[in-house]
Image 1: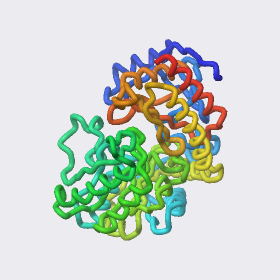
Image 2 (image 1 turned 30 degrees about the vertical axis):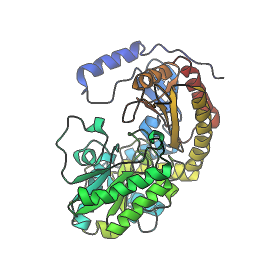
Image 3 (image 1 turned 90 degrees about the vertical axis):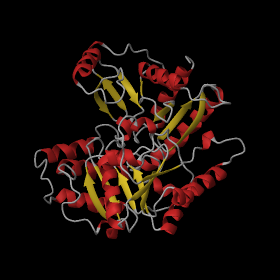
Image 4 (image 1 turned 180 degrees about the horizontal axis):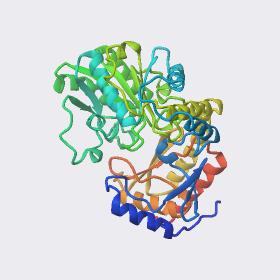
Amino acid sequence: MTAIRNYDLPGPKARAVLETQAKFLSPSISTPMPLVWERAEDCRVYDVDGNDFIDFTSGVLVANTGHCHPKVVKAIQDQAGLLLNCYDSAHPLRSAFVERLAGLMPEDLDRVLLLSSGSEAIDAALKMARVSTGRDEIIGFDGAFHGRTYGAMSAGGLAGARQGFGPFLPGILRAPFPDYYRMQPGETPESVDAHCLAALEQLLLSQSNGDVAALITETYQGGGGSLVPSARFMRGVRDFCDRHGILLILDEVQASFGRTGRLFAFEHFDIVPDIVVVGKGIASGLPVAAVVARTPIMAGLKPGSLSSTFGGNPLACAAGLASIDVIVEDDLSGNAARIGTHMTGRLKALMERHRLVGDIRGMGLSLAIEFVIDKETKQPNPEVARGFVEHLLRSGLCVMAPIGRNGNVLRIAPPLTITRELADEGLDIIEASLQAF
């Protein structure tokens, strides 16, 4: 069993940083944690007071190649002395990057728009769908999180992320998303899927004016609590879109580039979207996102109608190309699948032994622990989730603030380079820490 540490957080240097932050930084950022990062290497984080932590965050699912991978760092350093930005002017790395991205996709997803963030790319995908179809309505799902720009926030259905920011964009329709953990008595995964798919059909009759351009969904609901749909449901969604002439947009901002054990999460479901949005792990920490679509969908876009000051800048492209090389050549998707299976097994065994752990779920190295007050009622337990996160930090395990519709879900997402030994160290900390609750 791993020796469990007991850090006094925040330390003196961290307190000074947090005090300055509290005075000058917008309070709109995520809940401040007592851990103040100074540097990170592969799967370890070091704070300003000299403490080191196992990282189960990947910097919010960004450092898929591990923090500061030498090949990625060198690519950034080499490019930094040549050219940092040239707006929309052509440069060799952008051409190479979009060709590489298109080459990773199914054959007909062959046109790429590079942008700076997932939210920006979601907005662009929605605009693209409206231009391509000449229609304006968008179907989204309850509990979805697509980002914090108005288009992304409007399409999302996570109430906490939207609170206070309305009114939102018109033309957004909402459908239920499968949550197999919270099935009602007598329900089965099959009946839950059937209900959610039937709700899509009913939505066209009760909410729509007959003008639906696209349906947008995450391949798994991240911010909503790491809810993973079945392949049956996702194939049903693809069929629904095909029958009604609706474009399918998949939000893979956090699910792509090996995170779920496949290069792209939609590969698990044997479907192909019309538009896919990727980001986060695409460039190991530099701000890059992309919309990839079939050529006919982008054909109606006029020059200058969708562009970005920083999208596809040379530094970002250098990082992206190097990151893809590492992910593919080192088979990080395969490692995520193997280590994810091992971690899931250990976590499920832990769930059986602990009264507050209601569910373990996820894909690859995007896993989640749902905390409940009682396993029978499944009543959410956000208080324990918050306390557990802080306990883990003080025990040497870097984790994110709780997520989910009720704030009671711990997200586990280490870099895809993690070894079984280090994963077990982190799980030992989780297991030991549970004894305090």
